[in-house]
Every structure is written in structure tokens, then in C-alpha cells.
Length: 221
Image (tube, rainbow, N blue to C red; front, side, top):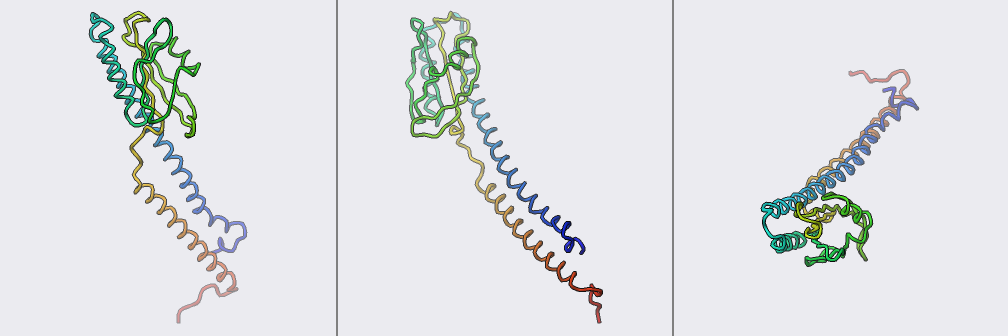
């Protein structure tokens, strides 16, 4: 019982509280990491969809390149209509990028060609990914994870299409089950209250123990 009366060692009783605070912070960090993993999975999904489109477009090198356009337009517009997913296809016309797909501005008006870093990437690479942060008008800041690819790869530059897809954290429609979050926070709160109550109880017992001089324990009769 000396730990409850020692002015220095009694602070060890706060260790359970510190551990609970650490658990709460860790849970917030873990939740953030889970959401980041879900966003990455969403990005891989749209990336694979563009690669699958490229595989279909490039399946027959003998096909006239103009025949690809309808397939590309239909596929990219379907992708763009998905919730909070960006999709667009461009064609070089007289050295200028011309948008050949209809855009659905359910999410926000976004033009990747307004960003110099994106221009640099598409002019130097056949395909790649880039993250662009921006804040649409009257909307929250978000980071758009973009994947682009030129297709068909074997065609001259003026006969290729630039296809782009992008997702942000808003694109993730699957949520962490609410019951899991509530259960973790409730268990943390209950454990915290029980530890506080236990510390108060033990501290009180330590005080009573200290007040009894020679006879610390009462003998049974």
C-alpha cells in the first residue's frame, strides 16, 4: 500500500489513464490510415479500368484509329458518371488538347491541364499518376489522385487519345462500420471511467492505510 502514500510513486496510478489516451489517439490514426488504404484501393480500381480500356483499344493494331474514338468516349463518360470520380479524354488537334468527352460536374469543375506539373507529366510519359490538390469554389479542399494514359500506344502522337481518371477521398463510398467506431469509443470511455473510479478508491484506501499508525490491519475476532 506504500505506493498510495508515496508522493512520487503515487503518480504511477495515472499510467492506465495515459494508456487509454494513447489508445484514443492511436484509434484516430488507425481510422485515418484505413481511409487512406480505401482511397488507394479506389485509385487502383479506376487505374485498372483505364488499363483494361487500353488493352481493348490496342488489341488490333490493324484497326483504323478513328474507330477507337466511340469506345473511348463511351467508356470514359461512363467512368465520369460514377460518384465523385473524374474521367476525361482528350485528343490533340493542331497541337492543342481538345476535350472529346462530356463532363458531369456532380463533383466539381476541374481541369487538369490548368496545372503545369500535370502538363509536364503527360508530355514526358506514356502513362503515370500524379496527385493534385485544389479547392473548388464553395467546396472543401481535396487531393485528386489522377492516372493518365496515352492510347493506342503504337500510334503517332496526333492519332492518340489522352485518357484521364481521378479519385479523391470523396470517391470512397464504403464507410467504416459505425458500430465498430461506436463500440471502440464506448469501450474506451467506460474503461476510462472505471480506471478513474479505481484510482480514487485506491487513493482513498491508501489514505486510510496511512492514517492507521501501528495497526494497519484489523484482526478478526
